[in-house]
Length: 68
Image (cartoon, rainbow, N blue to C red; front, side):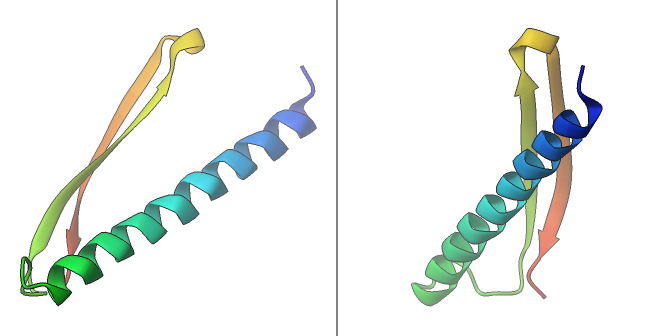
């Protein structure tokens, strides 16, 4: 295994996940605050599932996103 390539690929994957997740969350929150579905002071339960079938890996990460 090429550890340098593996680490580079992991960093690229995690960067894509982080950037895409942040963009989509911000878009959804701003839309819902804008149209009144959220007040902007909520705490939003959130979870992400990391799934890699070839590794029999499934990890769920739960947290809360506070808007205020």
